[in-house]
Length: 324
Image 1 (spheres, one colour):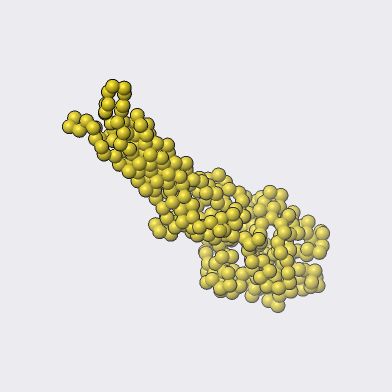
Image 2: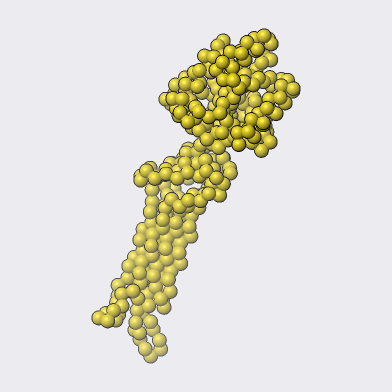
């Protein structure tokens, strides 16, 4: 099942119920005066944050949402019932934009609730229009229409650490090894086409699909991938020990981060030299020395070595606790 992180649909709040024309009737005393009730208010539309990054899949084939309308007023000055409010659930990290008005809302914590559309007011019944010169008004006001709009939903994942780097540097393997995630693995570019999440001692790690040169300008799926790194607290910059030039690889990915978002590029970054089992110790040591000239925080990892995995996981947890 594909990971859904963008959606577009139309939303309409409820229409207000109509006010009505009614008159009081008692046995032997007809037309005792106006008694038409007011219409009920239309339902508002709210968005609410849930801790379920996959919930957008539920709305994949939904084109529109609509809150309930208020009911018309009744006899004997009885007001109509208000329409039920509509609550639409989106993942924590969602950015909601009304593309008609330009208004935006962000859901940054679980259960956060924000109103995006207001329901229409109910109309007045004829009781409101009684006066000294008009004892039997036959005028009532219809309910007002609710607000509506076209909306774009964009998910930007919240994670404690985001695994970034070129395709095929071992990010998915790392995520699967140190967490309970099940990210697809393959020895070719772009095996991962959507972000995957895993948990490590209560911390959330995200496997961000591989970046390429030009990603910040939208090349490949650049913007789609990069935006998921904006809300991560720590960047794990993965570089394969099998590369011909680790410094060049590092600098090119750093440039994409800087071109995309200066704040993103300023986040705490740890370099992870992966696949060290595929090179000899001297080669790995030389690469670490070179990389430390760019970033003093360099970790190494072989997913085939239990001790290496444990050392990496323990160090990462310490760093995440420090970076909370």
